[in-house]
Picture (cartoon, rainbow, N blue to C red):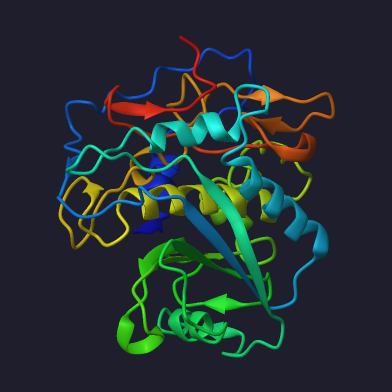
Length: 313
């Protein structure tokens, strides 16, 4: 449910962090298949077409918004060259519910709302999220997933200390409906080393050789990676009774298990093999409008391991 920093940053502290390049031959990713007990807990998944709603909270740079929109519009695009964002999402669609209906591959950016007046202030708490969502004029879409995306100047409890984003669901008593939502903060000025890794040096190793972000905007590119993970987890575990490993009070969801893994050979402080564009920026999936993105891998229920479409067999 939450994108935790502690496990990944602790691993960075313990492991050596050499420079990242495509021609290195890093150690293999630690085999977690015998350690992870990913289970289905009989709850609903998002198997119907998903309507995505963005709530732009705060003052946003139009270029950053354009990059995020292009990512969201890439999720269901079948016309992109492989490996694509849609290929990455295909692993999410491998998760079935109890009727063997799988998470949908049909996602659209249905609408956008703008809260540039900071209706709940610029210092938010988790309880602020439903109030922000409520303000966009219910009724809410029963097939909607609502993203509260906060601008770089907005502070959120635990942001940069414990989480980069989280997903949950609304309550009928507050907003009149129960629908999944997620919050993701823009870390560009607050904590890029934590929430925009590997485009900024982690605080535990300030000498780490960072990668150039694919859209030349580390904060926004890092945010897109968190958006992808939260959407994948909200689709496979929308109400905390779907797919996860461990206890429901602290579930390990399909993205949590693969933090820091972006390509084949990840391990020993390396993110794995990724592609490099002529301008020197790094990516592992292609998106709409000629954009590229770097998305962490997610847990594959068939391979019983972390996987992404840029995997090298």
